[in-house]
Amino acid sequence: MNSIICLKQVPDTEAQILATPDGSDVKLDGVKFIISPYDEFGIEEALLQKEKAGGGEVTLVCMGPARSVEAIRTGLAMGADKAVHLDDEAFNGSDAQAAAKALAAQIKGMQYDIIYCGRQAIDDDQSQVGPALAELLGLPHTSLVTKLEVAADKKSVKVNRQIVGGEEILELPLPCVLTCQKGLNEPRYASLPGIMKAKKKPLQPVKAAEIGIDAGTIGAAGSGTRVVKYTAPPARTAAKIIGGESPEEKAANLAKALREEAKAI
Image (cartoon, rainbow, N blue to C red; front, top):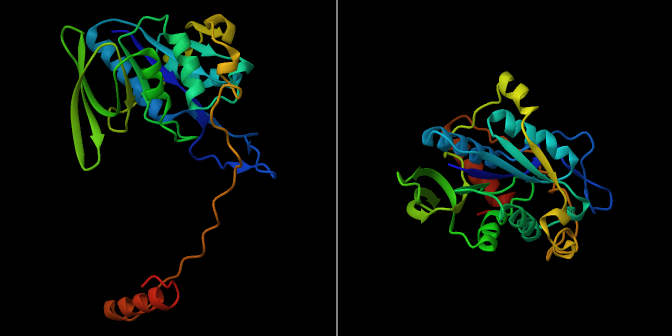
């Protein structure tokens, strides 16, 4: 079972992200970076399916600057076999569609049964790269996958996906693209032996010219969307504790505050 995981390096979920004074960008100096958590579900599922099948290869494909190597090595330490790093200034500033074009240009020449993406990257939260990648490669796709089972003949996969108010079960022919949701599995930690082995695993740097993609279709030049301005969310007002000697008095005081102060009722 050969799998590809599209991996993205993002700021740590606990990092404090601040906008520059003019709002044109965000300050990333000193910020810790990690693998986007939903991508970790894809790595883990690929490893589980490889173990279940008794063989195959798990390949990471990451588009990002030089610092992304740290996230790639973490994925390799988790157990992935090899990685491809799309590292070129031409990719800088790509929106979701341009990123999908670059990934598709690389992946179209690779061997795979399933391509895993996170349901969304936690930095931009757009949830577009997976579906766009599937469209560009002409592959069936489904999102928000919480369970999957590959058929014995390795020609199809049955998946459970999260929908509003319930769950949907679908069957897709292989190869296909799946985006992973929390609950699919519990990603493993990179072990010390895994970290040591990761240093020797193949990590191929790739430039835009090597995958035959027009620089005008990727990066800022090839992006149909752009960020106009970054702004911090408004500061929250201080909380107010509703007092009272009894539950009835507290309820009355709460209703009074909602009516007279918050103007909510």
